[in-house]
Length: 370
Image (cartoon, rainbow, N blue to C red):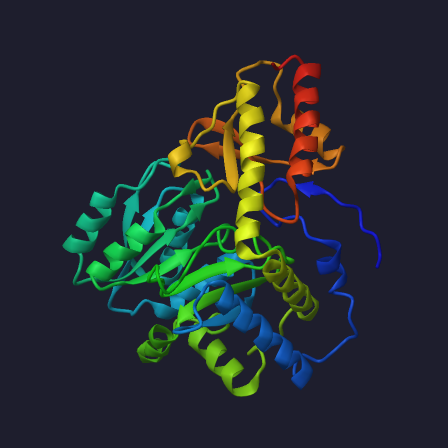
């Protein structure tokens, strides 16, 4: 196995991967129309459903795209022309849902909360009640990666059920990083991607869809082509093939990543991520930093940290100092508040966080920022 330089990615994704996932892409060239590749495709699809505890009523549609492509496929495929979707927006990705709907002329009702603040369930219910004859779907971000806030999945899904609307959940940076059960949480469409908590390579998005709901979309006049969820699903069911050319090697990497997910065990992965958050949180707070999100609304997957007030501080200089030593961090801006973000997902471990914190403190003291 070829040794690959290991970088510790503390950005929100793509995440650090194992060498075994990287090397899984080194395979003989194969036509994706071959039966062998079809069997691989079905195994990946079925295990993604299993990871979401959706074996009873759900299927999975895989697409060659970033996670945004999966969200676009959902919104453009499942919302009837005469209906609207209620979009909950408290970060950049909720806003992105609105922009997608605007681009396609999809009707939407918006709840715009200031970024970084929790959603008010009373306002959500009021909107569902006041627009119940118009709204067919409730769409929201589970873990809003812009700021690291966790929106209340079970409570929002319960409200959707109460008003008989279906749910579209962007779980890009939470699926396979914390417990999500699409059956128990009444999720009709869950969207995620291959390069975050599942720890694969970028290039594949997937929608774990309630099969009954997906089949109903045949009544909707298509407003898309490549991203049509139902057509992609039906083609795979009939032919054991992607409807369009897939990223072949990336799928082999995803197959390996899913195998490693189940080998580690979901609960162990969730615990590993949470333990790294605790290590990071304790030290960063000890150094005098403040977090954007209150602990009770935190997913323990990504943390937005307020920039220090020191005149000696420069995010770019800090980034470069850390990058040269093998650690990648990410900037963030919430309104007028400047932050940087530290993610603790991917194939990284407590020792990696501890090593990062040593270099982080070294930089801060060297430059007299603390």
